[in-house]
Image (cartoon, rainbow, N blue to C red; front, side, top):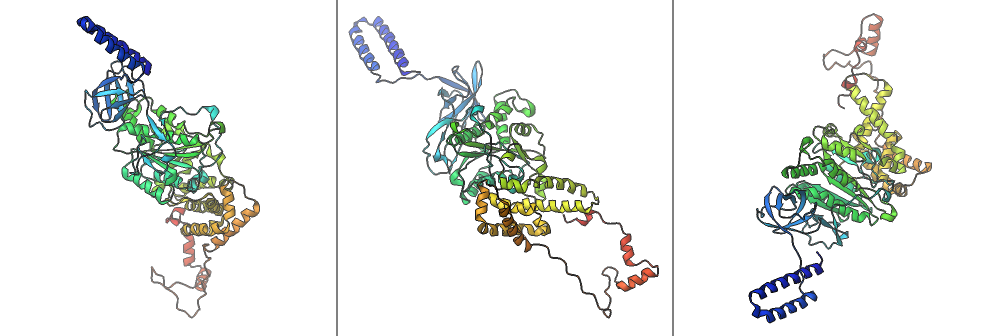
Length: 590
């Protein structure tokens, strides 16, 4: 309320009280009149500030939510102040009372405590000072490194940029993961979902994408929703050990925090990222994970007695995620020129991607990376299922050099996956098909990658070139890991200019490709499988060897020929009469 209006009301109230006093005791008229004039002069000079507060009372409080009465002026999403510096968010507006979500603990609150309207919405600090810090959903530091000198505070809830302020996604976000950058590329400003069962490498995939931004101008924000404190600490240590924490913000609402904080933390992190986006910077936001976010919203809604729907989620569960992820985009130059890439993570149960929350997020995002537990337990890491993964936008953003060596890779790998399933049933295949299977096995081995070891775009191109040109076809599968390591150590000092050209998005000339191929072939020659040497013919005077199983003497070749001429079936004929073993038995080690 304006201060002039408050002053006028206070002056009128004093006049009414003075008149009531004169009615009781007329002899005090001169004293009261002089006192009243003096107070009016002070009020006119505005030396006595005044304000009007709207105060209500707590009716019920428990489990992170509270019901408040006496605040008919409250508005949706308005911030309430409770005793003990605890704040709440207006969620339900009923005729007699309001339901609010607490953004803090409720142990010190009880029924009857006063509640005050603030007239504000939830805001969080933004600015350069947040880089390298770990904060909670309200921007309060959690890393013990002192207060944050922020530039300003922005609302956590904001409208998505209008269509006229957006521009196409044309630049690739290099994650450093071969399987992603080659087969499922992500563009800056895209929304790409990571989906998979519990504990099969979803967070590891996202952290590697952050580590890959070392030395770039991209800012990363890792949002931990309902995670254990130990998990957040492990992520923070990994980022610090690899030197990328100084360009990263960790926003955490751990499992012990109230459901209200877990609900607003992704919106708060997006607000922090939008500040940099409107400054012309590129931002990557990892939401780990939105399954827990949906559960916290379901918990809040059930406690506030909102009508449940499918799987007990409220009816607007789709909207809370769509309005969050719609804020990811790439802006035009006049609107800021930056980009915000959203990579949400969602957890499935028993590979069920048709569950409620996964299908919602799949329909909202521009593609998904599906992690298969079967591949994970076979040792294929990252366990990306190429057939169920897709990027609807990133293909247009792929670096020219990566596109040149990966255009046939996805098709070959997908065909291999189908053929491998077919051969498991013991079916015999022709030589051409067998070569495709062997090539697919090498592709799968090449795409394996250890954690915390992202590759530059140039290193990926060189490794994928060895597959595209068939250079690794003669290398045993068990030697491919050492081959990649040696190739990375060799290629960087020898072709540093070409690698820089690849990372800048420039196309390579034929002579440059030939130079890379020669280097790769030279390295591969040291790992190629050696041809077996023919055994020396044994002397006729040597004693014939005995069969290891029967103990009988093995006949010489001449004896076998004699037996064939005599019409007696030899051991060679017996072998030929046996049906060929199936591919499954011949390749049982695979």
